Image 1 (cartoon, rainbow, N blue to C red):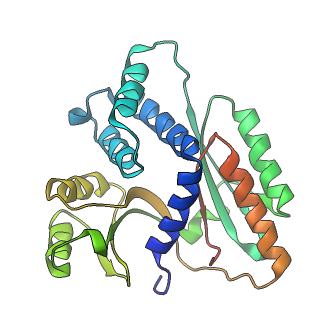
Image 2: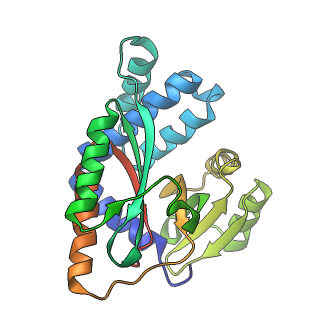
Image 3: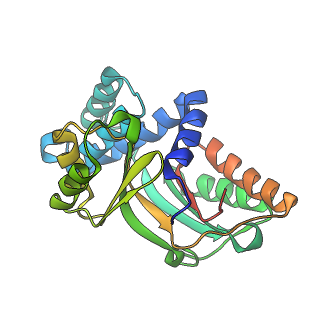
Length: 242
């Protein structure tokens, strides 16, 4: 994983998100609704909801918008029920792509995802066809410019809270956890007043695929752009070395 600046990728993602804040707020709004339905509206008793609220704040979602979303999910028995679905498939040159979605219409979402792969000259595969190439981890990124303390101090705080690994990049620190320990580690860092630019459970590629053919690059970008435009799609993971 060395040589891949996660923070650079996040800044790139954030710039895209800033240009389309409505999209990221829709994504987080659905995650809030699902978290409330699964564990109730009180963040003190719902670690998943706490994690989604932290993600919302990291993406500059206003507090009143967060509170409205929680109240709506808690009080509206007739609100939309979203179902989590995951699609796996291949882009150009064997690149692996995983798509996580929250949807109220699986047929619509499946058709849209298949269309995105087809237009990029890829194809949707069966469950498990590419996920074995990724590790599911809690990943927390801290911007060096925003953190005043010592690297060793940050590392000890993270490891004491249950983190598995700590990496120092050129512009950031990366903390990795098991999915089960993610909430506890994120909470410990938040309690210590440590600012996080990204904190979520993610799929990290074990190896990356480099694309050199111009058409391959255009094709995978087409697929990723179409998936990004789909409101049902929550997250896309891939092993293309951008």
